[in-house]
Image: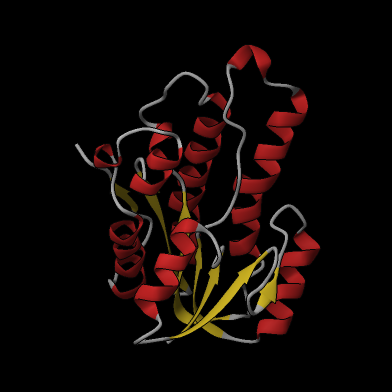
Length: 199
């Protein structure tokens, strides 16, 4: 299959590319390449990415940022940035894919555990993750017969915890999380929230 990975240079994106490359033709997109450049906050940039890309069998989006900070310190701009980036950016990856993803192709987005298990500082991230999941469930109904759409919800990723000075063992390694994206790609499922967490 010809597969577009949005966020190919990020922690999860690199592992998804590594996992899928032996069996599929992988095209990487991110703010700085490697193959295509895209800014998730700019719908015109997403449209341009698809125009340069041509047709693919699948799109995986492992990109998008949201502000993590205590509620009292969050500004209107923090909310607006997060909604425009990780939520509407991924929504537009799906909306703009029409005509560029093969009939019956696969679309996979990314949410996160904080929609279900909030912690202090996760108010905006939780809103965004829950919104992505709600969108996928609805979009799957409307795209049935045209494309499959799912979302991977990673828990804490080991490498992220390590970067925060916490124990890697409390999370799931990025390479293991990548397997969930492969499942969305190859299994005949749609409208699913694929949870990846260490309990």
